[in-house]
Image (cartoon, rainbow, N blue to C red; front, top):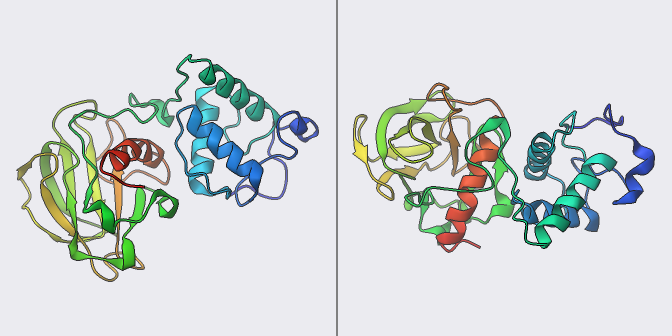
Amino acid sequence: MVGPTQPKGMAAGHSADVFTRALRYGQRGADIKTLQTWLTDVGYSVPSTGWFGPMTKAAVIRFQRANGLRPASGTVGPLTASKLLAAVKAASKGTGVRGSSGGGSASGGGSTSGGMVFPMTPVSRVLGTGSWSLDQGVDIPTLNADCGKQVTEVAMTDGTIVQEGIDGFGPYAPILKVSSGPYAGRYIYYGHAAPALVSVGAHVHAGQPIAEVGCGAVGMSTGPHIEIGISDRGGPPCCPSNQETSPEMYDILIPLWKKAGGH
């Protein structure tokens, strides 16, 4: 979280060139909604809520990293604002400006393989993107705290279940090793699941049920939801550090959510 002092490298006196203030975590307002719209326009999809929350901060950091802005603090000062405005203008002229995911990932701007699906079904029992949050993975709550047989977790893509049970995420949480496509060799974990529906070693296909959303507090949880995350390229099966890969997973999920009929 950004402290009360202006981050190093930001010149507060010129932020009025684009916005009338420096924009940072925790703020609300029409300018925040404009920021969110612009980020989405250039490939960093965030809901336009008017609140500068963790998703917006993560998107700003990825934009800053992709555009060589240092430090990549997540605060929108004059340099970031002017770069973003220029990117929006370029995108509006049809140049196809898209952001790349942080950390040097090969999957940028929400691109996904055609064989991937949203990890929860039915999507009508899943709350919208304004309720999602990012930490190690993407936390996605359910409508009316639905769980068990009401909301099934499915394999996002073809692969093998290599582990069930993750410290902090419950004894049933499955880990899927992706077998093909741009994420081949990486691991997708499903936190707070209960029970698991397939065994370790099972080969699964995109859309195949592998678990249910756990009822109550499964692992370190305050209620029914899924935390869906992906390992870093070359990293262990679980788990990445806070917001190490969750912005990338968010970018993967958004088009799958829309394709599944989420809104």
